[in-house]
Image (cartoon, rainbow, N blue to C red; front, top):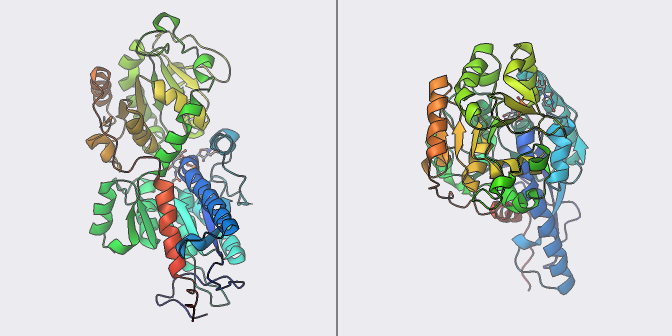
Amino acid sequence: MPLQEDNSCVTAPADFNPAADAVVPSKVMTVVGARPNFMKAAPIIAAIRKHNERLARAAATGNGNGHSSRIGLESILVHTGQHYDAAMSDRFFADLNIPKPDVHLGAGSGSHAAQTAEIMKRFEEVLLRERPALLIVVGDVNSTVACAMVAAKITYSSGEPRPLIAHVESGLRSFDRDMPEEVNRILTDHLADLLFVTEESGLRNLRREGIPDARVHFVGNTMIDSLLAFRHKAEQSPILDLLSLRDNVSAHSKNNGVARYALLTLHRPSNVDRRQDLLNILEGLEELAATYPIIFPAHPRTQKKIAEFGLEHYFVSASGTQAQAPTADGRIRLVDPLGYLDFLSLMQHATVVVTDSGGIQEETTSLGVPCVTVRENTERPVTVEVGTNILAGTSPEGIRRAARRQLAAKSDHRIPEAWDGRSAQRILDVICRELATRVPQPLPLA
Ligand code: UD1
C-alpha cells in the first residue's frame, strides 16, 4: 500500500476489498473528557451511527451511490476522565444518549501539566493499540490538546501513518493567553488536519494564523445541534418544580406559568480562584438578587472556593429535591451541578442568564435569552454581534449595568449562520470525503 503524498494519513484496512460496492471500513476515534465536550460530541456520535445505518440499508438494497458514502465508520469513544463526578459526566451521557465509552482513561484532576501529561501517557497506549484512521477532538479543554498532541507525534513500528486529526470548534480566539483554554485552542488548531469552525470570526482567525483554507470547514455549531435536538425533552425535566419556580399567578401570562428568575454559572479560575475577584462579582450581583431569585448550579471548583474563602453567607442551599420558595431575600440559591436536560430547562425559561462559560453564551443566543457574560473578552463574538449576549467585565458596576440593560432589553437577535441543527452531518460529510480520498479507489471496470 503506497504512502499518501503528505505521509500524514490513512491506509486502507488490511481486509479492504476493492470491489465496486464494498463498504470500506475506517476507524474513527472520538475523545471526550470534560463537561463541555459531551454536548459537542454527542451529535457527531449520533451522526456516525446514522451514517452506518444508511450504509447498511443501501448495501441491503444494492443502492450504494458513490465512493465517500461507502466509508463504513467504526466508532470508538474515549473518555479521558478529566471530569469524573456523576454530576459532571455520567449524567450527561444519560441525558444526551451517548453510548458508554469504549475506553476510559481515568486521568482525573491535577495541575494543568500533571493532568495533560497523565492524559497523554494513557492516550498514547490507546492510540498504539487501536490505530484509528481519524481522531476527533472537540472544544478547548486539556483533554482536547493532550490527545491531539499525542496523535500528531505518534509513530507506529509498522510505518503506518498517524491518524488524521479533526478539531471541532476551531478558530475561536479570546486573544487572552492567560486563559488555559486559549492556549489549548491555538495548539490544537495548529496540530489539526481538518478544522471545523462554528462562526465567521473563526475563519478570520485561522487565516490570520496562516492555516491553509483547504483544511478549514465552516460547519456551524454541534452544541446547538444538541440543544435543538433536546430542548423539547428538557421541557419534561422536573427542575422547575423542584426549585419551586412554577408561578401559578401568571400561569396564563407570557412567561408560561414560570416565575421570573436569573440563572448563574461561575467557574473560570480568573473569576473564582481569588477571594477578591469572586467578591467583586457577588457584589455586582446584589442588585439583581434583590429583584429576582438567582439560581446558581455551582461547579465543584467554585463550591470549594466559596467554602475556602468563607463566603457561604452569600448563598442559601437549594440542593437536591429540597424545594426553595423563590423569595427575593438577596441570597443566591446554590444547587449542585445539574444534568444537561435540567440545566437546559432552567436556561430556556430564565429571565436572564449570568455566566462566565463559553458555551452558555452560545446556547442563550440560540434560545434568545438575554445573557450577561462576566468576563473582559469573549472568543465567541458572534453572540454579542447578532445574539443576546453582552460583555459585562468583572467589576461590580459593570455587572450591575449589564444586568439592568439586559432586564430592559427587547428580544432582538439573529441566529448565527449554520446554527441549524445540522452541523454534525456537515462534519461527517467532510470526514467521509476525506477518508475516501485516502483509501484505494476501486479499479475501473474493463
Ligand atoms: C474544565 C475546562 C474548562 C471548562 C470546564 C467546564 C480545562 C483547562 N478547563 O475546567 O474549559 O469550561 O471544565 O466544567 O480543561 N472537579 C471535581 N469533579 C469533577 C471534575 C473536577 O470535583 O468531575 C474539581 C476538581 O477539584 C478539579 C477542579 O474541579 O481540580 C477543576 O477541574 P478541571 O477539569 O481541572 O478544570 P475545570 O475547572 O472543570
